[in-house]
Image (cartoon, rainbow, N blue to C red; front, side, top):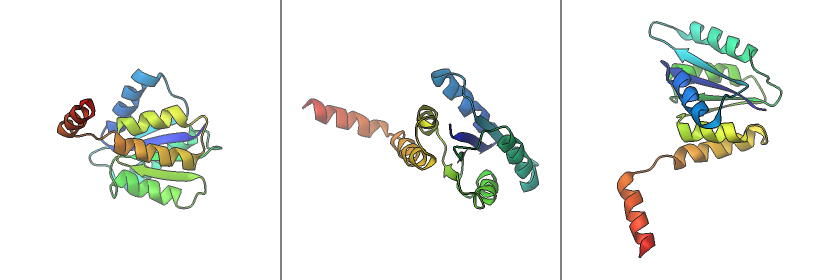
Amino acid sequence: MVGVIIGSHGRLSEEILRTSEMIFGKQENIQTVTFETGEGSEDLVRKYEVALGKLNKVEGILFLVDLFGGSPFNVATSIAINEENMDILTGVNLPMLLEVCGMRESLTLDEIVFNAEESGKLGIKKFEKCIRENTEEEL
């Protein structure tokens, strides 16, 4: 099973995991890392190291972070760049996380990354456009 670390500014990572577990149930081999006000990159490095130490890394590690270019992303990049079986997706959202939870026992890291990226994008909908498309389908 691919290991997952959700990294975010504030408690977003903890809460999005908690929300996903309301739907999928308790998840194994997944950790959260929070970047709090007043902390620096060194704090994040330590938190990521602790999280990695709790995960089974055999199938690979996927970092799901909140913001491209933010501290959780930058520190994850500094870790993953030297590893063969690690990847990072930014813009973590609930559809993306649910897709990861549903696939990580049966797919490779690369397959999960591809599908999770697509699910994250497809989970973004504009209400007006959805109504228009549904009306057109009924015609």
